[in-house]
Image (cartoon, rainbow, N blue to C red):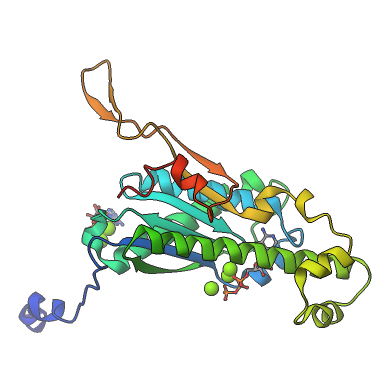
Length: 257
Ligand code: ATP
Ligand code: ATP
Ligand code: MG
Ligand code: MG
Ligand code: MG
Ligand code: MG
Ligand code: MG
């Protein structure tokens, strides 16, 4: 007891380092399912795209935006990943990186478990899913848009590849043969060869999911009790092009800061 009383809290604390995210930059927290290749097989996800699984991911992203409504202004998701954009003026946890990352990814993960039954009423969750996460700072809205474009291009290329792959498997090829025939192939050509009507595929599969507040910007609502509060409106999920400028011009509030 004597010795415990001699430990100085300041001394023990001095080993802790807070990495702070650079001020006045956009922060992207990207989460990604751990070993979801296996998770999706064990839980019989439809291939290449299980829409129940995607809708569950989207529902968790909506919950994250509602929970962190002061700070997260936009999210983009595809497959087992989601990117959450914190506005550049955010002071969430004084911008301490590990606090921000862990709070978002654990909230997302527990929502995933809680909502599982709503999207998979017929199948048990066989083991606890987990997600990893990282934070990256982007110094300008332009670079942030480049980041989001990169994720949406990735969605497109992966979806083209996976659609061809599973079409080949459905036609009787082994996974190995399918992989070999797609190696280095021009996906656009392959799609034509395999008679895939790509543009008829659900838009969620082709464009991923964008999540944001559908609100009248910064309008204060005057409630009956005389108090006023910010009108957040409601969080919506859309499957749209975020590479071109049209979306951002229609929603100037998102990248305002
Ligand atoms: P890691 O732990 O390194 O992220 P991973 O197995 O999760 O490994 P990813 O590159 O993240 O690998 O890919 C996720 C995998 O999860 C995809 O390859 C796909 O097989 C599967 N997956 C995720 N979402 C779905 C979905 N909605 N429908 C079908 N399969 C999915
Ligand atoms: P923060 O988000 O900053 O961590 P917090 O409310 O979680 O805020 P902590 O300092 O982490 O604050 O303290 C955790 C609190 O949770 C304790 O003060 C206590 O009230 C409560 N708590 C945690 N575990 C138990 C437990 N097993 N039994 C009763 N209360 C508990
Ligand atoms: Mg990963
Ligand atoms: Mg993964
Ligand atoms: Mg992934
Ligand atoms: Mg505590
Ligand atoms: Mg606590």
